[in-house]
View (cartoon, rainbow, N blue to C red):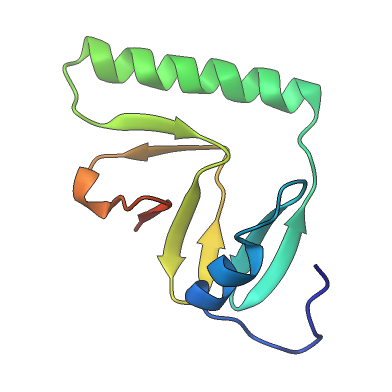
Length: 102
């Protein structure tokens, strides 16, 4: 999915363009569509351990937040959508069927 150069996209346009992407992952950063590389094995191992530690801490302290891992879209603004390796969501009302908004 090559994007035209110098075109800035909105989050809505981004989701429409990438909705059928099966093999590649994309982020939208300040209106520009970026193709993400696959993470390395060591990266995945570290990410798994950090996710587990965060989840264990939240549960053991009685927290209500949830730990999410990639690939989950997070819409930060009208021109930025990211796929963080790990994020903690504390407001369930910010989820829709596709992403976390905030």
